Each structure stands twice: as C-alpha cells, then as structure tokens.
Amino acid sequence: MIGTPDPARWTEQEPERFGLMSGYAWRTDPKHVLFTLARYKFVAQMLAGRDRVLEIGCGDAFGTRLVADVTRVCVTAIDLDPMMLASGRDQTRAWGMFPKIDIHRHNIVTDGPVQGHDAAYAIDVLEHIHPADDQAFMTAAAHSITPDGTLILGTPSAESQGHASEPSKEGHINCKTQAQLRELCAKHFKTVFMFGQNDEVIHTGFGPMCHYLWAVCVTPRYWVRTR
Image 1 (cartoon, helix red, strand yellow):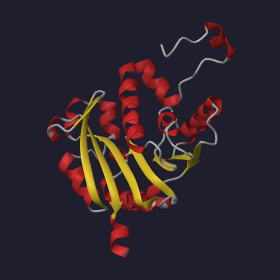
Image 2: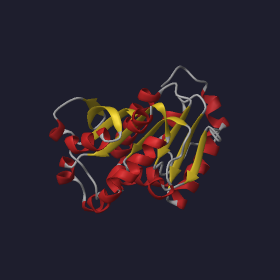
Image 3: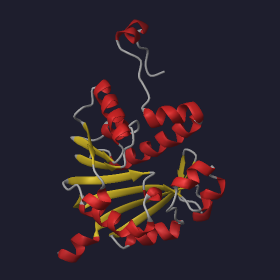
C-alpha cells in the first residue's frame, strides 16, 4: 500500500476497470498482465520527461497510462481496431487523462508517419506486421520522431515461439532473433541498443535465451543522410 490513505476516500470514486484486451488477459492468463505492465514500465523509464510521445499499436491503452504519467505534454496512441480504440478512450476519460492520452485510428504502414514527436514506441506490434512491410513500418516510425528522438521496439523473440500457445503463434507472423531485430533497426537508426526480457526482468543476456526483445534506437538515419 502506498502511504496511509483514508479508507473513506476509496468510496469516493468508481472502481477502476480493465479494457477489452487487458480484461481478457486478466481472466485467462493473469500473469501476462504483469509481464505487459513491466514492458510499459521499461518504456516509461526510458522516455521519462519527453514532451510528445507516440505509441504505435496501443490496443485498449491499458498500459499507456504508465508512459503518460511521465510524459510532459501528451501521448498520441494509434491503433487499427475500432473496438480497442473505443475501449481505450473510455478508460482514459475515466482516468481523467484525456487529452493527455490522445487516441486515434491510424495505420502507420499504409498511412505513413505521425510527425512531431520526440519519441515513439511499439510494444507487441512488430510480430504482427508482415515481413514484407518491415521497411515501410520502420521508415514511417523513424519519420514520426524528431532528429534527436528515440524509438523503442518490443517484440517476442523467434526462439520464444517454441513455447507459445497455438492462438498466439497464429498472430505472430514476424518474430525475429535478436540479431535480425538489430539488423532491421540499424538500417534506419545510427545507434541501436539491444536488451532482453524474461518475465518482468530486463537484462543484457544471451540473445537466444531471451523470451522478449527490446531495441532502443536513436538518431534516425534519414536525418544523418540529409544533414
């Protein structure tokens, strides 16, 4: 418990709700909620103090609040699924964080960049994008941030798929090894820092033993080429 709040104050507000996706995870595999929030916490720690941050693939925006709490101006959260977006908007209004979390429908692969952000991140998105669209995704993501911006990508590793459920494997069409993820990101960013994650633990351990991969990318190459 944080501090010693007056229990009477707990009745002054409605109980918090899960979104569509986070609620399903809580019912079917509650530990996955913990893993997901640990991923958002990592992003929040990396991007604390940024002004405008872009989330690519926000789902129901349940974890977005962790990043919004440390963002100075706004998190622009984009996704494709209208039901998830509606769920996310309901939550952000209930939290009193609208418009600090500003949710839009946008396909970054086909609709292009969302410019004007000093950082961007995508958690559990890349593995759902067709490999043929990798370059379009990375180009749009890089052009969504300023020349001194940061892009953070988090995705399950290729090695983790041997332990994934069948429904999960059906949607994971583009899982990569650590070396493959680094190579993809290095084509679009001058500097790429790689991390691994197992359950809630972030580390710099042996790539093939990472269940989850992180790439922290800085200095977009489009800026280097145009200077």
